[in-house]
Length: 395
Image (cartoon, rainbow, N blue to C red; front, top):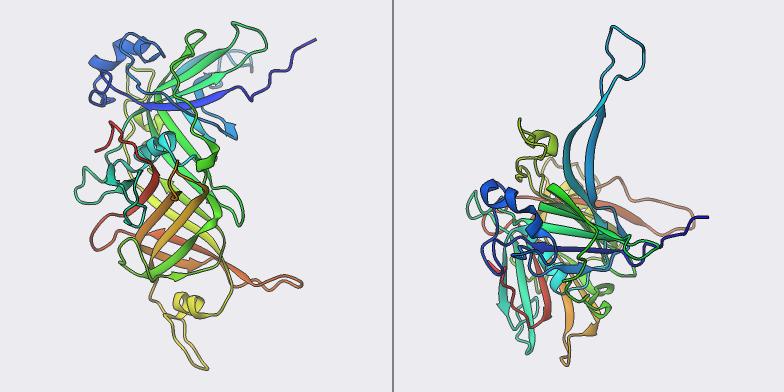
């Protein structure tokens, strides 16, 4: 009879790759410094190249090693059966579904997603002074071509439990980048994030599972019933202040970094992808508008036209966007909630169909927005208000 192994004791975690503790981030292409020292990435390794190892509770984890094994193509000169198999490549991919704690581990994911982090000081996300807290800003920069594609390197760990002692293991991915992340906000509930990683190489370990940071607490999760969804005139800077608040029945933010694929990055003489570069980055915003009036719909379809006969307009509708979510609990001994804030100064919105008329139901319409390159400033930004902390990885 077999023994059922529960997944509840499994762990998902990540950390920045460092050449030495607190040192400069390793560049993936520097193979002389990296490829001969894979064992140092292991927890407790000689140089502890990943420091610290953050971990985060997860609803689901599918990160792991991809073993690209292939069966040979059909050949003449024999039977109709496959004649052989081979391994073409190895890399890591996948991620998890988490209810983000608005603290350290999630902050590092936001840095990996955007490529830039800075400390705004003891303020909330709208810039109001608050003692004993800190707000960090994560920016999708546009000031130079290099800054618009620069992303940090991560290592990612998954601990896999077992039924018996000394049979558990870990899968560890190195030279990873965050290829995408979805943030889903329900009508009433907890914000959920789905990060997706891609990495050059996987390592397995059956010993040395220590050196994790403590879990961030559930008291810092963001709930959809505290905050707002606002639109304002195209180009409006953050925070809005007097933007128009819309009743949203749900919001999904899809951030993509558009990395090169493992197939594109394979080179002769190496089983592992050579690099992962950002080719096309975007933010897609999906939300459902609980219908109040036709003002927004006419602005999208007819550039705000009025009258008894309104013509369709070829002009696209753009607006600045902001989303604010807060925790139910407060930060330490303060009266300030944890906060998640996202802003994009120029978003092209369109309706996904017409308002739905459903017998016995209420009126609503789905909207889709694509963030566009603004006339000036950042493409988008995220702010996190949490404990008064300083990170060694801030830009």
